[in-house]
Amino acid sequence: MAEHVTRADFDLYMFPNYAPPDMVIVRGEGSRVWDQEGRVYIDLAGGIAVNCLGHANPDLVEALTDQARRLWHLSNAYANEPAIGLAKRLCELTFATKVFLTNSGAEANEGALKLARRYAVDQGHPDKYEIISFEKSFHGRTLFTVSVGGTPAYSEGFGPRPGGITHLPYNDLAAVEKAMSERTCAVMVEPVIGEGGIIPADPEFLEGLRSLCDRHGALLIFDEVQSGVGRTGDLYAYMGVGVVPDILTTAKGLGGGFPVAAVLSTDPVAASFVVGTHGSTFGGNALAGAVASRVLDIVAERDFLLEVKRKEALMVELLEGVRARHGHIADIRSRGLWIGVELSSEMAGRSKDVATAALAEGVMVLRAGADVVRFAPALNIPDEDIVEGVSLFGKALAGLV
Image (cartoon, rainbow, N blue to C red; front, side, top):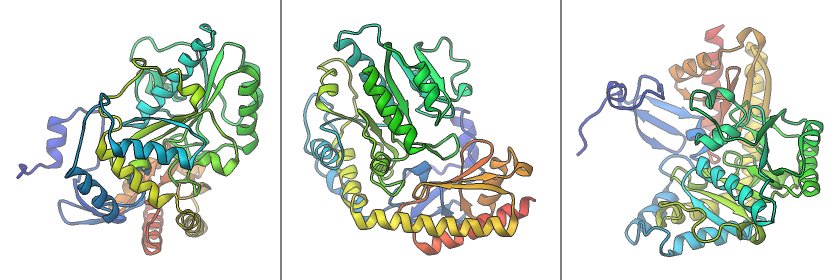
């Protein structure tokens, strides 16, 4: 039996790069969690869009425990059935014909960026290494991915950053056209800006990026770490706009809470990762493969995705009601069960205050910058939890003003 720990122990023993609230969660079921004091919270945060099927989902528990009795880990020196099955399923469901499995979104994006540069070299263009990405984007916390991300504060203070990276305004196709050249090896883009405020890309913008990449012989990389696995109401967001990338990264919801990620691509591009060029010790372990395959079995169903869009409409309608009653909301942006509530000018910079007040009322929400509150609940969240959760959020917002 593990020794009892408290929130004070967090500060005593863990690195100070996080600042969680003064409570410790001990149990979750569906879209509700309980802390050490027995208080219940409605979870509209979803582990940052990770717990796509809620907490302790019986199907995922079954998949995990069944696999745990058989085989956990081998390393990639040997093949295992669940990893192969997961890769096959991802290829069947998407544009991809090859998959690289790893553990997190940052690792998937790191792999995608390395693959793009290596592909250019293999095509006989060693000077074709420049990468274009976008302001407000977020691609991970490794030194490479945080440099490609469009939030300078995240990469400051870590010494020289990788070069050959250009950041441009999101949804500004003219800026991309001006910046691209024969030295551009890839454009990396989120179909919906997540951490930067839930900002969907204009379909014409993504279509234009596809055309420009084709013109310049560059690869188009879609970072679908957050937008993938049903979050937007499509299995992957690219499907909703009809623009197919060369490389796609997926993580977060893919394991429903179990660490797993993947880089998806096609045979010609994937061929650049020959033996020894890239790897992952834990990537593609049997536990992750089994759980992620079960997630896809559930989320990829048409009726399930239609329900995501129905729940989106319900949640937006309720949030519009909060807006009408209390004001202090400038905009509500959504793609599936991924919703950004932009605070009005008089509440500017107070998203943290709103999230703190919401927690005090018994509902968990996220921030997406200083001015946006983000909702990313389980995709199968019951309607009654949506209704109660939004009501508590409205109460918290009203109490602040």
